Picture 1 (cartoon, rainbow, N blue to C red):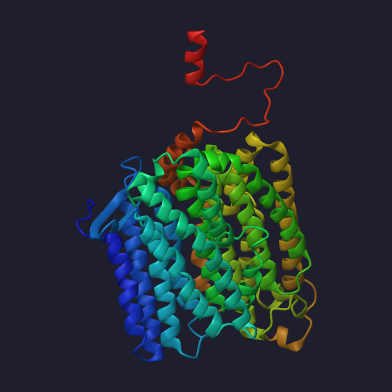
Picture 2: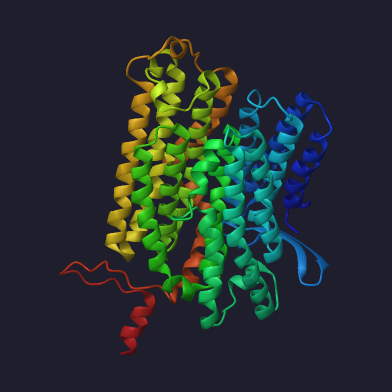
Length: 513
């Protein structure tokens, strides 16, 4: 148990779960208000969690355990990394409900229930401390998303939802087999215990690849990213927000929680595979984004490029890379979610996502143009916005390991500025092309209420990232210590004429000689 005196994590799972069940049996309007209330209660609980989180205290806090049956237990608990990702989830959920308020008119109760179930599963993934419990939450997240795309999506929604489902399911079967083997080998399904367990070297490679198959699809890494643009284009606006905002982060969370601490040796062996795929992804998907005519597709490809920056940061095996990757995950969750909301706003007015149909929106929608500009700049990584901190740290971390990977990754950021500014110029500036564009009204109160909180957090994270990095610092330190033994030597050379900086261990070594 924790200091709060009540099982706060179980409560955060129970509130949306109960609301989801009730939503199925009430009228459309009641379902909307019920979903909004439930997500706001979870946001409040999340804030309680953050306020009571003891930075620098025990690694695992708010731990709850109840043995269910042999080897499988209801075990919840969070560290700082999980705390931040849970905060991201509970922050975006009420915004998603608000975004669906007028856009969704059919089967509203079921739609809200699917979103509330999604929230339960997302929090569960980040809070689970039993490996099988994690697997159940991780995989079950497919179901509500599949329904959201398949029922309330665009014209080609069936194809997109099947593709999404099959891609993600295929990788996960291998992961489950690996989990059975690990639990059998270590004699426990407790995640914190497994994170410190040394698996035999010959098994690590196979286990790493099995987990990689699942996390690479979820991330999504090139070349298994092709489900993402389809899913985004067909999903309703709120579906895209949660898909980009939280679901893509589960892959990154998987690498941090499983691949790196549990299989450190294999992680180093396959480091170059991750770098190679990520470098291709950064450049290739950025070039594809440049020629897109559909706004959602452009932002979806930009997500693949941003997630590639996360994977290179994670596999840099140093503090800057790991912290940078985590901040990119948080920042991208907010910024891409906000960009999809911005697309949703004009889609609701003109019912098209074709970039060429728009133009000159800054004339008749100045408030919209201003917010859209802020999120565009954050996506590029302008200093002072959340995007800058994470990308800068990730690239700094990767530069220590390989200057070539750093150079290639940086070109992706330059290309990113290219396609985002090109998109913004075509939509917000130029001449108004038609009367129906000229007649589009500016943001209403509901839309401002959705976009403004994200804008505030994006600036807050850019100006004072410490509030988000402080809870994660100890956990990154623990992971770094776990990887220290196997960490590869980087190609960063000491400048001629300067003495190398000796670590305490090296000092002892010197004295020994």
